[in-house]
Image: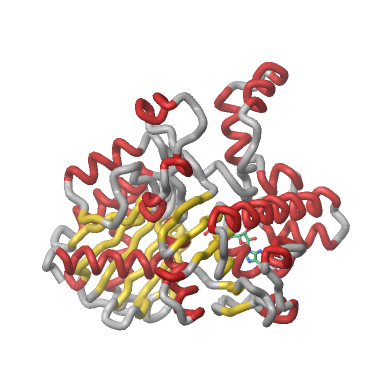
Length: 403
Ligand code: ADP
């Protein structure tokens, strides 16, 4: 069965076409810079192609270009688009309603629209992708997979903020959590690697990419996670600072004359690694500059890993006993320095790295990096959100008897 997985951002479409009979990737790619100037398509099918100046004003045009590439005699991998039976859409915010993947109908679209208030940058492009795919592939089953769904198992004590309770009831102000598909995927892989059922494991999973979040998972269920109402809370990220005193906003507005909008922009786009270092939001640049003696880059790395360590400690307390700690995302999968600093000094919690294994874990392979006498297994697992979206889309289609 051919399953097409798409992830629409405000000006981009990331995609993969799977043959789910053996979970092989037939084609994948990224279309960037959707809009009035030329868009840029990088497609890898039978052969690869880069089209730097294509015309794609919106998601509809963009999807048409991608589908053309999938059936192209040279770059394509299928004869016609009717072979695509299922489309899996990554949707960022599903609010409280969705705890699993669902077939998209008008009610689901309405619910995603309602959640757009909570994710104004993400849900509207997700909806544009859904509309475009429904139009271009009317016979395919359309499935929505929500970033928030995996965290729907959080107990009230973990998701209600200590704020006036009516705000939760009236405005939906609560912790939702994000990166759910990634945390769930690596948890399943960790269980496979440890040779134990997920239902018997306590795991801490750290997804460290441009956005960063950490989750405590008991028996396969998310019980605590660092991102909150929005993806701004928790760990230090590329351009977001994560946890902070909310009074800073009001203090700053009074002192600097910045508008709320300007402060919000600075918190979302000019904070985190970029804000501390004044240099870059990219961890590779931060590490390199630190090696060359840049003090603020060193401080950025220190704050990033210190915050991460605090969360590992807190989530150990939440779980009581931890079987596995998993690093994933571009930083988690590749950065020897981040993993080393985050785990340093945690032998009291049963976490000990094997230095050599940590140093060699950079090649995108899943591996164990804990020392033989570490009570907690420490793992590096490349995430694969697209594959989990593909699997969950097939399950939904099968339940409907459409596959
Ligand atoms: P996204 O969240 O956009 O999917 P990724 O998961 O690809 O992003 O992660 C991007 C981050 O991974 C960037 O900060 C990048 O610097 C970091 N990264 C990638 N490779 C390395 C590396 N070898 N060492 C350190 N950081 C790396």
